[in-house]
Image (cartoon, rainbow, N blue to C red; front, side, top):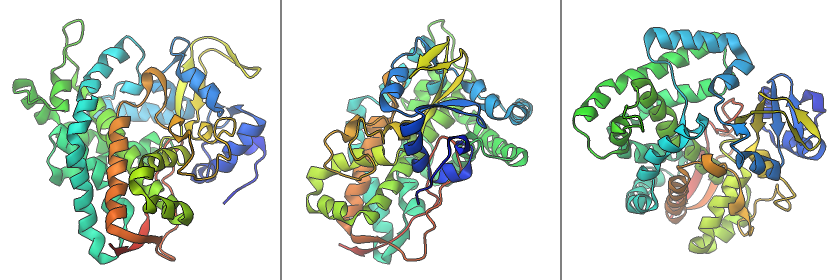
Amino acid sequence: MSREYELQDISFTDSAVQECPYAAYEHLLREAPVFFDRRAGTWVITHYHDIRKILLDPEHFSSAVLEAQRDTVNFERAAAARRLYEAEGWQPTATLSLLDDPRHKEMRAIFQRALRPGKIKELDPFIRNCARKLVDSFVADGRCDAVAEFCVPLPLTVICSQVGVPIDDIWTIKRWTDAWVRRFSMMQTMDSEAECVRKEIEFQHYFVDIVAALRNAPNGSVLSDLVNYRLTDGSQLSYAEIATHLMVDIFVGGSETTTNAIAEGILMLCRNTDQYALLEADLDRHLPNFVEESLRLETPVQGLYRVNKEDVEIRQVKIPAGSLINLRFAAGNRDADKFPSPERFDIRRDNSSSHIAFGSGIHACIGAPLARREMYWAFDALLRRCKNIRLVPGANDFAHAPGMLLRSLKTLHIAFDAA
């Protein structure tokens, strides 16, 4: 539902804005493309070309914002979390997306080997079979919660298989990654945050013995590569670094965003029956661009942060050095200067793939090729086995988990006819 805004009312700490941010994006794109969110303490950038320019300029805009992004929003809560990690587990370190070169480049090389094009191609049959087995598990029922029964287990099963985690443990892993996502939302009470930190610490302890075993007997998995990698100075990653990369770069980055993208894609098909019919009529032709248009219109990572290293001026607005800058990818993906009629879902749009759902530049999402293949096979399996996919009347509230940066549909109840 659209909503009218006064500029001073807009804040991405507002749960109503988070639930449906698009009216706010439209207003900011038109009236204030460089906007200071007073409640969040961040500068918000919404235009596609401004966001791209910043992403492509790591020399002047740093990604090392681990402490700044949490302390700016709530210093007291961030400090309490740090004390709890130090007392019971390991203090998280910077993730891949929060490192600057040269450390970023060195760490990224580990993941690039694991996610190289040849490896993704090898995974294709496994991903396809996982998607088909999941659809087979509910197709005879004629209905399902697509989020819980399909969108969550598909990418998480793929990631667990690559890391070497028993598939039976995926729901335990999901409970831990959910805790990280809730904390990342920066929308919690002190007590709720402490509960999530303790779940993350459980995750840290789960991998202690696994990491120790891989030190002694490498097995070629992505986790084994991470554990045994030697930095340029000859040292190896600390356990805190390994646990952080595992949680964020591998499990959350490798599953959460894909889960959300698949769920929103299904919802858009149900709401856009003309596009659904077009896709179904020629699946092989339209499916790749459907994936891109879904990512553009319902961007799973709504935005990420940068810190400017010196004073900058963007669209005649001066931003002081050291400011926390919120790059709203989802707003840029609805910028009419780049995408005509940006609110329209059009699987024949000729520039859908130029979206910035996966970022851009040296920090472009390294898992994007894998996410695209998971989305492709998810929809291929669903649309070949299920016909007349539709929303279950009265069963959906279409609510999203609260969060400043991620957009995550909680449930999606659909009905269908078996093909």
